[in-house]
Image (cartoon, rainbow, N blue to C red; front, top):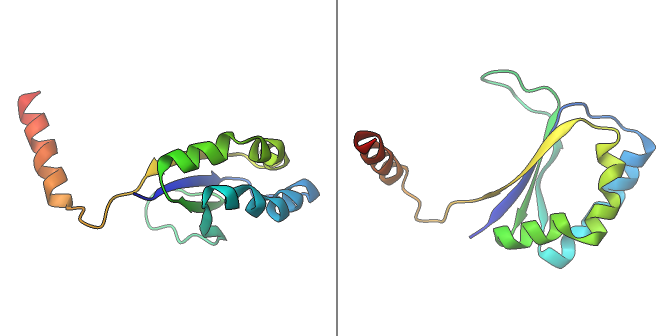
Length: 115
Protein backbone atom coordinates (compact mmCIF):
# COMPACT_ATOMS: atom_id res chain seq x y z
CA UNK A 1 0.00 0.00 0.00
CA UNK A 2 1.35 3.43 -0.91
CA UNK A 3 2.63 5.73 1.81
CA UNK A 4 3.28 9.45 1.75
CA UNK A 5 5.79 11.90 3.14
CA UNK A 6 4.06 15.22 3.68
CA UNK A 7 5.71 18.50 4.58
CA UNK A 8 3.92 21.69 5.57
CA UNK A 9 6.44 24.41 4.80
CA UNK A 10 5.18 27.42 6.72
CA UNK A 11 7.90 29.87 5.72
CA UNK A 12 8.98 29.14 2.14
CA UNK A 13 12.29 30.90 1.54
CA UNK A 14 14.29 30.66 -1.67
CA UNK A 15 17.64 30.79 0.06
CA UNK A 16 20.49 29.40 -2.12
CA UNK A 17 20.74 26.38 0.22
CA UNK A 18 17.05 25.61 -0.36
CA UNK A 19 17.58 25.74 -4.12
CA UNK A 20 20.50 23.32 -3.71
CA UNK A 21 18.23 21.03 -1.66
CA UNK A 22 15.58 21.10 -4.39
CA UNK A 23 18.17 20.27 -7.05
CA UNK A 24 19.50 17.32 -5.03
CA UNK A 25 16.39 15.74 -3.50
CA UNK A 26 15.30 13.58 -6.46
CA UNK A 27 18.53 11.59 -6.33
CA UNK A 28 17.71 10.71 -2.70
CA UNK A 29 14.18 9.60 -3.62
CA UNK A 30 15.01 7.38 -6.61
CA UNK A 31 16.50 4.42 -4.67
CA UNK A 32 13.29 4.22 -2.59
CA UNK A 33 10.73 4.63 -5.36
CA UNK A 34 9.74 8.12 -4.19
CA UNK A 35 8.00 10.56 -6.50
CA UNK A 36 6.55 13.99 -6.02
CA UNK A 37 2.75 14.21 -6.01
CA UNK A 38 2.63 17.87 -4.89
CA UNK A 39 5.63 20.17 -4.74
CA UNK A 40 5.34 23.76 -3.60
CA UNK A 41 1.94 24.37 -5.14
CA UNK A 42 -0.15 27.34 -4.08
CA UNK A 43 -2.71 26.11 -1.58
CA UNK A 44 -6.38 27.06 -1.67
CA UNK A 45 -7.48 27.28 1.96
CA UNK A 46 -11.13 26.41 2.63
CA UNK A 47 -11.00 25.85 6.39
CA UNK A 48 -8.67 27.19 9.05
CA UNK A 49 -5.31 28.77 8.49
CA UNK A 50 -2.57 27.30 6.30
CA UNK A 51 0.44 29.55 5.94
CA UNK A 52 2.99 28.48 3.36
CA UNK A 53 2.85 25.54 1.02
CA UNK A 54 2.74 21.75 1.00
CA UNK A 55 4.88 18.95 -0.41
CA UNK A 56 3.61 15.39 -0.86
CA UNK A 57 5.89 12.56 -1.94
CA UNK A 58 4.53 9.08 -2.68
CA UNK A 59 6.42 5.88 -1.85
CA UNK A 60 5.58 2.24 -2.55
CA UNK A 61 5.05 1.64 1.19
CA UNK A 62 5.70 3.16 4.60
CA UNK A 63 8.97 1.26 5.05
CA UNK A 64 10.39 2.77 1.85
CA UNK A 65 9.38 6.24 3.08
CA UNK A 66 11.08 5.66 6.44
CA UNK A 67 14.23 4.31 4.79
CA UNK A 68 14.39 7.35 2.49
CA UNK A 69 13.98 9.84 5.35
CA UNK A 70 16.62 8.08 7.46
CA UNK A 71 19.02 7.51 4.56
CA UNK A 72 22.46 9.11 4.76
CA UNK A 73 21.86 10.76 1.37
CA UNK A 74 18.70 12.53 2.54
CA UNK A 75 20.02 13.36 5.99
CA UNK A 76 23.02 15.02 4.33
CA UNK A 77 20.82 17.52 2.47
CA UNK A 78 18.01 17.95 5.02
CA UNK A 79 19.67 20.90 6.87
CA UNK A 80 19.74 22.82 3.60
CA UNK A 81 15.94 23.07 3.96
CA UNK A 82 15.39 22.98 7.72
CA UNK A 83 17.94 25.72 8.41
CA UNK A 84 15.89 28.14 6.29
CA UNK A 85 12.25 26.99 6.30
CA UNK A 86 10.02 26.38 9.31
CA UNK A 87 7.60 23.53 8.98
CA UNK A 88 6.50 20.05 9.88
CA UNK A 89 7.07 16.72 8.13
CA UNK A 90 5.20 13.44 8.56
CA UNK A 91 5.07 9.98 7.03
CA UNK A 92 1.66 8.37 6.71
CA UNK A 93 0.18 5.21 5.23
CA UNK A 94 -2.31 5.63 2.43
CA UNK A 95 -5.51 3.64 2.05
CA UNK A 96 -6.01 0.76 -0.35
CA UNK A 97 -8.24 0.79 -3.41
CA UNK A 98 -11.02 -1.01 -1.51
CA UNK A 99 -11.11 1.46 1.38
CA UNK A 100 -14.64 2.05 2.66
CA UNK A 101 -15.12 5.10 4.91
CA UNK A 102 -18.47 3.76 6.15
CA UNK A 103 -16.67 0.69 7.56
CA UNK A 104 -14.30 3.05 9.40
CA UNK A 105 -17.28 4.96 10.78
CA UNK A 106 -18.88 1.70 11.96
CA UNK A 107 -15.65 0.65 13.70
CA UNK A 108 -15.36 4.07 15.39
CA UNK A 109 -19.02 3.92 16.50
CA UNK A 110 -18.39 0.53 18.02
CA UNK A 111 -15.31 1.81 19.88
CA UNK A 112 -17.20 4.87 21.14
CA UNK A 113 -20.09 2.71 22.39
CA UNK A 114 -17.71 0.38 24.21
CA UNK A 115 -15.67 3.19 25.77
